[in-house]
Length: 457
View 1 (cartoon, one colour):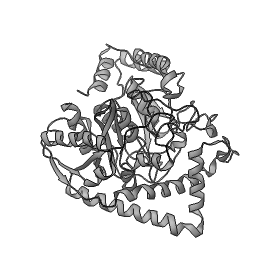
View 2 (cartoon, rainbow, N blue to C red):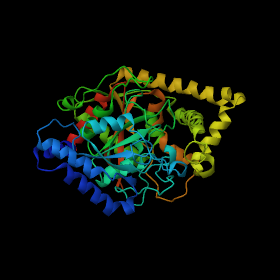
View 3 (cartoon, helix red, strand yellow):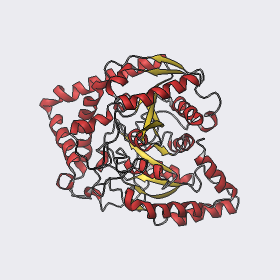
View 4 (cartoon, rainbow, N blue to C red):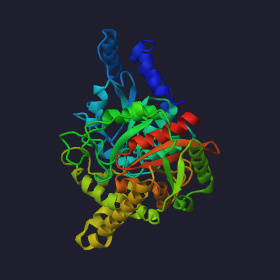
């Protein structure tokens, strides 16, 4: 199981499926289904022409890239030449990108075809997929429920089969949250592994671009494509390239040390936790050693995260003043975006920095130290991705209840470590994802655990 992406690539390379046919089918599925799902904001009018170019290369026997002919969705906070990078906001609804983000360049260099710009929570401020200025996104895996955010369109696109792979971003769980709710695979890479040039950032010290895919092999393939340093960016790890695909099979989870924490059960709905416990037992059956680790301050990460991200978001949005491009953000943005701007403005004031922001940074250091200590004892830490099931679209919940979706995902961003999500089961027909957190540059171990569970499903 879990070889859908590689099988399609093989079919394209053998000539059994043309790139044009693959992209055309994706566009037809989007046309047929997306009026209901709302996973895309805009489609690429040049997608078929780009697919034709791949087919000509294949016909001539020329080398094609590792993504040749695959249909790729791109989150709308990433720049793609000629398409609108709206961030799902009225602020940038008319902003047309004049360049490709570095990750988009890499996808195109490997033959991937950008089919369109995925919907998202406005400026990536949200955990549900409901704050887009254009429309909330539905969850194809649990219709009528939120798909999770902020990479809502990416998660929904993969769940509905609207495209082959998607580029999402994760600041506090924005890839892993929708991967869990939509029953797909998502990976938040180690901070600094993937270039952020061309990303319209939410929190510059937290953001990472990563893959959303139908299977682990697809996520690994896309991560291989986009990872590695660039001379145009200073805050990057000294990694030229990564290699995962050839090392995913084999013994799987056998002999690996898997960490679990009793703190997860304290914060998580028992129905969700039951599915997670079942996945842990499966890993034990596959030959992994399960070890309990201590994460005593885990819940402190959430308030610290929202203080830090609000300050960084306030700073990032000062360029949206309506003078150079777009509209003045405070005049047209939604409620959650404005809430974060105002919070960030308040905390940034000199008299409050020590009281709030500096303390949040101290908690960040504490969370990082705890996770690092735990990961010295184990290869990965596994647990729930989100502590509760997704609510219904339009259901009114409190701000604190919305933020609580991020309880278990923000620690990885605060610490700068990697994390992946794979479907572990269902509760009342709604997917539940297992989160696997790994060391700095521990993506291979994370992917191996995910692949072992996928193969055993």
